[in-house]
Length: 272
Image (cartoon, rainbow, N blue to C red; front, side, top):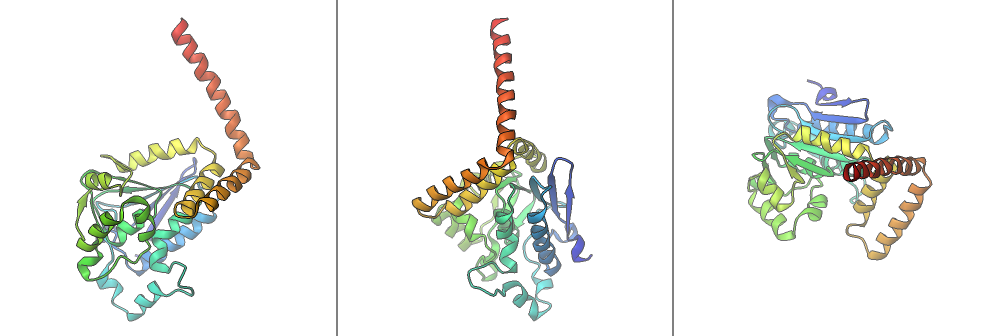
């Protein structure tokens, strides 16, 4: 299997891109071709104007079982390829498979089934929404191997859970269920069919202006931990940019028509 099909992408006519980690015989474990394929996929989707929503999933029984240690360690150069960066303040290849999803200007929904360990969980954390099966198995697994989680997951993790919860999960490498992850805030929803639930959410998001969705995602990503002044500045600036686009006017016309129809339906129901 080549790195070109470690990840598959299916773009439907609505603009929903289904991205599937495609190494099911190995639990979608991360080897070098998988890292390369995920990074290439993110960069391609960032530029594709046809894409409105992304659903990220794993083929087979598991989302991702984490790093394929045996495969990655076959060459000493692999560690350099994963960790090297020209600036200490940007993501390296290992981190980009998580942080890259945060930069894509459309909503990213991750559907989690089976095992989601280590690097797999850090990839999932990069999505905007996570939908897990109740019996899914999640873990920040790196401490088991005497390592720290270093694939960019600390950025979204600090936005989702309190510091003591993050410390406990990372220090113990404890495995938790999808239900427990929902209670802690690691996942957005639990569902017996995460992929179907992801498509329902995607359809709902398709009814909103793509400009507004992109601006909200960027606003919250940049402002969640910034000063109040910068957050207020970005709100105003991004709103101006949205108002200058045609998609906002389309949204107003669509919602006005829908609102009028809702009012008529209400009146007919109550006065007939």
